[in-house]
Image (cartoon, rainbow over all chains, first blue to last red; front, side, top):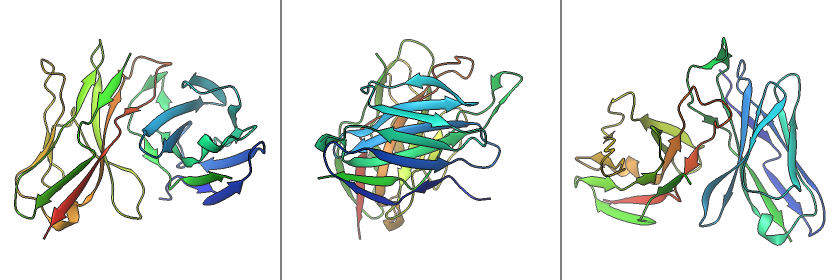
Length: 118
Length: 113
């Protein structure tokens, strides 16, 4: 079974530019989560999408946004890049709900996209 | 606010010695606690969770609600245990709308041969 995939592996941008990161969840998973792993800060929750809707958002400014497509893949967009946005961005997916109930909240992680802002 | 604290950034242990990675949490309800591990050049993966009460790769973790702790333990360290370990707090599965993991800052465990 293929795991969560992310692209690109590395992304180098300059301040003020926009970055787009992509994630494909495990087949059958409908929830996608985005986390930022900055040096020394651990993983910080960014966004959660489920069934095409944004369900929850971490403590990040609005220039961090995203969307989920009908095939459950997702994009994370970061506008007006700042130097401190340099980090590893991880995507995770979890199994779907059955009759509205989440059966398992284990999250499966992708390899990440390393974003460097110069 | 929910918080997970891993007080040790780095931990070095000799092969064969016991290992304990500390994790404390703050949450007013009944959380689910996880340990995730990231081996060198591999992705983050689940090691164990408190509800399964199982031992994975010789590791165990007991949820202590009184002390709000979920320390990870192994009686005899092996070289392949060297990795980055993250403690994470999840929310009750019925709590729709709050499905995220709150991670600690991680502990890098190095096993000395």
